[in-house]
Image 1 (cartoon, rainbow, N blue to C red):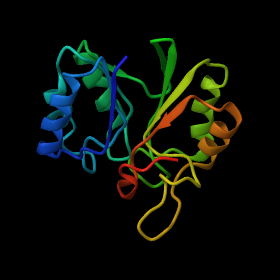
Image 2 (cartoon, rainbow, N blue to C red):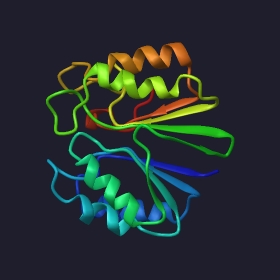
Image 3 (cartoon, helix red, strand yellow):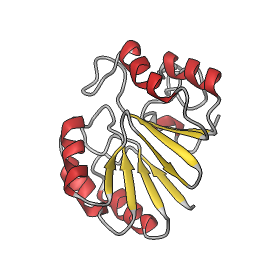
Length: 177
């Protein structure tokens, strides 16, 4: 199964066009949040991505989670993945959106843990998150601060998913851990 993971479009029309082109070449897409900018422009970013390719979405800290869920309900090929999971190609993809407290769709570590508790016993797990785990190469800002979730790091250490895909930290574009 050929997959595309993307995030942090923030309404950028060139990025939207590029993602739409890439979605036509894959079996499934995963949108990992921050399609809007401070809650503005979510429909204008998401609706151009409608095609025959199924896309699973989690909200980012800039996205209105209810609006994203509604947009997913409006389009047959879109699916809201936050707090949910789906089995595809012998893997279980689980979604976790949001950002740190104080951001528009911020989740406390406790709320995040409540969502993660749903995923503990899933097999062949692939996590699709907006905010990365704390203390990794992909949660470091330009200033050197780690801004990921500690509960997510602990979950990843304990459960050892097959992979974790995340967005949020623009400085980490293209980095892996």
